[in-house]
Every structure is written in structure tokens, then in C-alpha cells.
Image 1 (cartoon, rainbow, N blue to C red):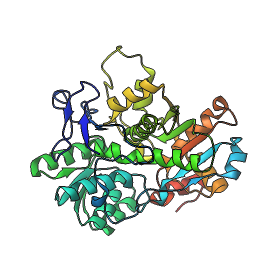
Image 2: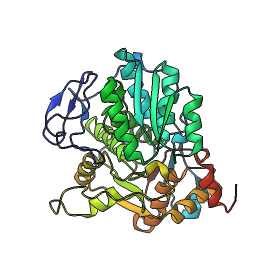
Image 3: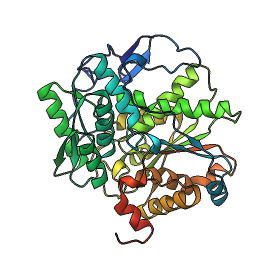
Length: 388
């Protein structure tokens, strides 16, 4: 099956080829430290067949590393504790690097292999960096990552263990993002930067296929709500893209409610979603992030405009929680389900806990658990009152 890129804003079409990232006319106003305009999405030339997994890179180019097909848990004790009989946990801490980001890295690496590209560069708060380094090691691709010095040490050590080139940035993720783009533009290196490279969205949609097909194979009803930890917005955009494909393929008949779960100290998507369209420039005035959930701490969500369009199209919502609620959700997930989540993943669970009375006790809800708690032991210790 053939794919192309399409700009949701203006409808322009482009070939999927090295060097193509954004829509030319729509991205002209982009500036450092701002959300990206002109983010492209992958579209097939025809409706994919039922049972297929439509991706824009052929399977023959996939790296030899087991990404995806992670468990969808039925956490009985946590269900009872929260009074939610239809709760499911999608466990992407089982990915090779311990992070959901492997889904995007896998597809980007496959694209690089197909086109003979030998180096990939990216910015990250830690998970995308360790993920790309991990998959790059399996694929035989050089990886250069730009990471804030404040990123948890476990994630930086992962990068080094996988043999990638680690560049620590004395500043925020947003500065690391812009620095990595400068490097890619100067050297011609393939950029894996989140949202900037459309394949990062496309790779993440695979989780939606797994959720829907897993439930169908069990004879259980379709998922009604999906809670996703949200910073830049790429994971949630990918989740939505997956369900869009499933709907077009006739494998599902309704779209679930999509929830952007954000930390109160980094809530640009929630803030923008609450504002009526046309009441000012979108995402104007970046607010410095301040949250222990480092994986979703961003000042300016690079995929903000793209995600906002998707959320408004399907009536998606946002929920914000404070750091105390995040740590409490982390502890609950660990002690009642046996899942030790990093703070970003716990944000999705905390968001569900905050909204559970509205959803009802029998709602079928999937919470995306996107990273292992072992990636950030310092904050995990805080959650249990330990001083390590």
C-alpha cells in the first residue's frame, strides 16, 4: 500500500521522502520555542484492508527488536479500589527501552534503513532519547540526542549504555528541541524530533490497533475512554490517528472519548482547549513548565496545533492534576495493580481518578502507561516518603 503526507491545515500533499518534515507554506511562520504549524500526517492512497496494520514503511525494513504487542491488563484490585469495573491498563513499560516512545523510534529507524540513512538526531526530556538510542543500537544507526541536564539520570545512563552520543543542554526541553533542529539542518541528519517528523505520530498509532483488537479477541466491548499523558501532544495524536484508521477500516463503529491528561505545571493543551477558537492567537505566550512529571514537561507543545484540531474534531477533553495527585496515583498503581509507573504515566491514571465519577462505574476505560517508574527513582521515593 502506498502512503503520502497531507497537511490538515491547507490540504497540500507531499511524497514521504528524506528531508520532508513540514508543509512548506504553513510552516513559514514557525519560530524557535513555538508550537509547530504545518505538521503533516500520513495518509494511505486507499482504505486499508481489515486486519492489516497500515504503516508507511514496509515490514522488511523493521529493525530486529520486539517493539509493540504490549499487554492490556485487567487490574482487578485497582478496579475494585477505584470502583471502575471496566478499567484496563495498557502497559508500554514492556517496550525494550521501557517507554512507549519505542513505537515512534521503531518506524523512524525503519525509514532510515529503507533510505540508507546512517544517523538520526533528536531532542528529548529523556524517554525519546533513550528509546531512539535503544532502537538505533539494534538497527545499526548512529544516534545523537540533545537532552536537558535536568533529565533523570537513569534516562541519560540508558542513552550512554546504548552507545548514542549524548549532548546535555543547560536549559529546557524547548531549547534542546531547537538546538537539535539546528544540528539536523546543518548536517543533513534525519530528525526524529517529536511532531516535526510525521512518522513519530504514525508509529504511535499502533497502540490503538492493539487495544481495539485485543478487546475484540476477548469478546469484550469497545473501549469508550482513553486517558493519555500529554506534553507535546504526539502520543495522543497518534492514538487518535489509530482509531481514525480503525473506523475507516470498519473494525470499530464509534470513536472513544480522548482525554489529554496533563500536569498543572505543564498544561498548555488544556489551557488552549478551554479557550474558544478565534479569541486570540493559538498557544500565544508560552508558560514555563514546572512539574515532576518530566516526560510531559514542555513550555510550548510542538504538536499543539495538530492535536488541538483532532481533539476539537472528536470532542476530546483535557484534565489537569497537580504533582501530589500524580504521586498518589503512582503509589496506587504500584500497590493495587503491581504497575510501577513513572510520573508521566501516573498523570494519566491521576486524570482518570479525578474524572471517574463523571464516567460511571461500568465505563470501559484504557489508561496508557507509557514508562517505567525505574526511569525516575528520585520522585518515586518521594511518593512513598523515602529519602534516597
